[in-house]
Length: 329
Length: 223
Image (cartoon, chains in turn purple, green):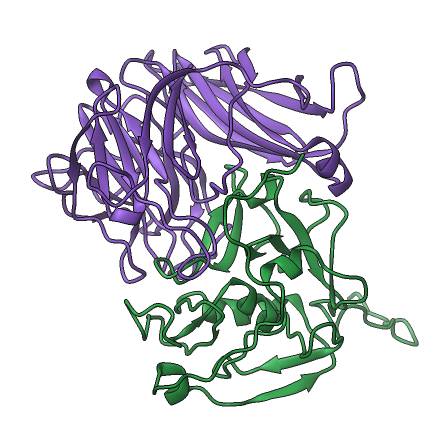
């Protein structure tokens, strides 16, 4: 049983870099409501590559912007689209020394992967499941062995309704030539870890239960993780809506970004909610469970708040009115 | 403690659509067509919103066709095609004018009407309005076509269950760069969002929800 104490202050994470918003090329893009968007357009994902290179999916400027480990601008990868006629960039993750961009089609929810080498993004590769159906690939999984994406059922085309279909993880296999990946994704028993095992993580209900599965040598076991939310240490828990997101492969286990809020509006008013980081060992034991820093900015368009870097470290991206801040645990 | 918002808030007054001075997509294509309805189902609201889901976005807008493309690309704020987030909900929920009016109204998607409510008004529903803020927002409480709303944005839950990642599938007008889309979002877990329900839904199974038992039992002869 994990206990989220809403009175707990966030753990201290170390500052890596701060990058301001602005119109200049070296600045990241921001668009505020209300004329063209109800929610701010901000960088919605980031990755930390070799040598600590920071890459941001800069939605407003239709590019991936790259910075040194201490935040100096070094260049951009162009060729992304930012209109409703084309797929939009959703997530970034490095794999095998390359940076991959996951896009969601504007008209269907599916996974289209492009390779972000060099100064321009490579050609789009629409991804299908083995049965030919279009998948809803919601995120990539940084740190996994190979390029892996989270599968959340069908995209809602070809007679397959959104909210149905297989879930879990899929492998995106290397493609030939300029093609970043093969067009058919391969379902996996879980997220492949460095030691050859697989771990799966799925939310059961919104009252704070999740299922962790572990597959090794063809055998699998599962355990249930449950969280309770309290207003302060020693107090009775109250019902909460708990979301377990953005699974990472880290240190032979998994890292999970959690957002939670009291279910009852009166408790939201009194106690607010918060964000936590959970790290689970290969055996399924919680190693880390701590509240993380957050801002008061409307960052709903951020898809990836935490990632694992090429150095194995865990990084957090914060967004506020002034710019983006990257912290390292 | 609620997060403070670093964004502008849509004006709380009724959103009356101004008449465009020059010819626009709205003036050239949209027309009045609406009628009173006495019942409204979630299934109908979902079907209505699904038609909008591949159309455009227009701030304070409320008129769209069904050709699955943006008819006014790269032309924001020009009385172009599409709703904004609160306008989509007004029409999908078959609400009536003026503000606070109960009952239902079916609006042709081609009628340019935004409605009397901003997203902020949905999120802070007043007593007696045709919608209300649910006391809780867990998945045991909400149902599809309920809304997740905050000051500045609102979207409709597209299905009852969540994804295996824990997110919700939401249909909403998400901005000029997205149009009106169906996407997975984590609004439920954001302290700024409340769950809002339209009053008076008719059950989807009506009028077949319960069938009367036959007056005499059936007799089946087994050979």
